Amino acid sequence: MKLSHRQEEIVNIVKIGQPVTSEELAEKLGVTRAALRADLAILTMLGILDAKPKVGYVYLGEQKNFEVIDKVSKVLAKEIMSKPITVSEETMVYDAIVFLFLNDVGTLFVENNGALVGAISRKDFLKIAIGGTDIHKVPVGVIMTRMPNIICGFAEDKAYDLAKKIIEHEVDSIPIVEKIEKEDAGRNQYKVIGKVSKTNITKLFVKLGEEH
Amino acid sequence: MKLSHRQEEIVNIVKIGQPVTSEELAEKLGVTRAALRADLAILTMLGILDAKPKVGYVYLGEQKNFEVIDKVSKVLAKEIMSKPITVSEETMVYDAIVFLFLNDVGTLFVENNGALVGAISRKDFLKIAIGGTDIHKVPVGVIMTRMPNIICGFAEDKAYDLAKKIIEHEVDSIPIVEKIEKEDAGRNQYKVIGKVSKTNITKLFVKLGEEH
Image (cartoon, rainbow over the protein chains, first blue to last red):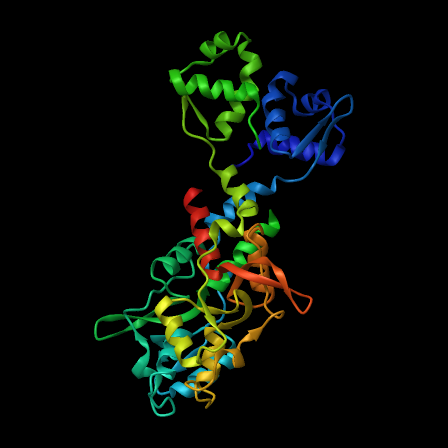
C-alpha cells in the first residue's frame, strides 16, 4: 500500500511544522479542508499522524507494518544468502567432514573446474560415517548428490520461494547459482555464488519481527 | 488496524448488494455522501472495496495483510511445534543414530524417568562418528549435552522468541517443555512435549507468505 502524492505532501508539512491544523494544511496545499478529510483520515488510521484536539496534527512515524509486509514477499535471495563452502570431487570424505566442522556449515558444495557438480549434507555424511565405509579412502565424488539432481536457486529469486523449495524438497540448504557460458556435453553449467539455508530463513524471520 | 463500526457497515452493505453506488450507501446509512468520503477512501485504499466508475463499489475481500502482520508476532510455539523424538540415556550411540534416521529428525532428546536430561544433534553424532569412538559401545548419556545446558522453550512462548533463541544460541532445535512437580535434588525437572526447529520456523515463514 503506497501513500498518494497528496498524502506524502501532508506528512512532510506536518513533519516540519508540527503541530499543524487542518486549516493550515488546506492553506498550504491550496485546497479546501473538506478535500483533505479523506487523506487525513487515512493518515491517522495508519498511525502516521495523530490528530490532537485543539492542537492540530502531529507526526507519529512511518507505518512500519507495511514495510514488514513488503519484505515477506520482496526480500531476494541475494539479500540473505551466505557464503557457500566448496570442496573438489577428489576430497576424501573424512577431510570433507573436518572441513564442514571448521567452517561450521551443514552442507558442502562440490565444484569441478568452477562448476557445481554436487552437494553433500551433514545427514549424508552421518549415513556414510556409520555405514562401515572407510571414510579416509572414499572421495566425496562417490557419495555426493549429483547435478542435475540438486535443487538450485538464483540471486534474484524471492527468499519466500526458496523457503518453499526447502520445505517441499526437504533439504537444509539451496545453492544460489549463476549460469556459466561454457556447456558440458550440451548441458548447462552453473557456478555457486551463495547459499540459502533454513538458518538464513530463520534469521530473516527474526529480522522481520524486530522491524515489526 | 481495526475498521470503524461505520466502515464495517459499508463493507456489509456492499457485500450483499454489490455493485452499490455512494448515493445508495449514503441513503441506507442516513448520512450525506460527503460524510462517507473518508471511509470509502480508506476501504478502497486497503483493497477491501473497489470503486468502479459509473457502476459503484464492489467487494474485493478482507485485507489479508493485517492478519499476516499479527501472526509474525502472535504465533505461539504450541501452534507450530512438532513431535519430539526421545531415547533413554542407555541407548548406544549407533542405535540412536539409526533411530534418528528412522524418524527423519535432526535432534534426539534424552529422557530419564520422564524428565528431560539431555539432547544430541546430528552435528554431535557426526563428531563422535568420525572421532574413533566405538559407537556400538558408548551410550548417548556419555556424549549428550546435559541439562541445565539445554536451551528450552514453553508451549506459550512466541514462535518469534524461539526463532531468536535458535539464532542466538546457534542450535537447530529447541525442546518445548513442561515443568514436572517432582524435583531432583532441589533442581526443577521438565518433561519434553514438543520441539521447535529451524524447519518449523521455515514452514511458518512459508505459511505467512501464502496467506499474504
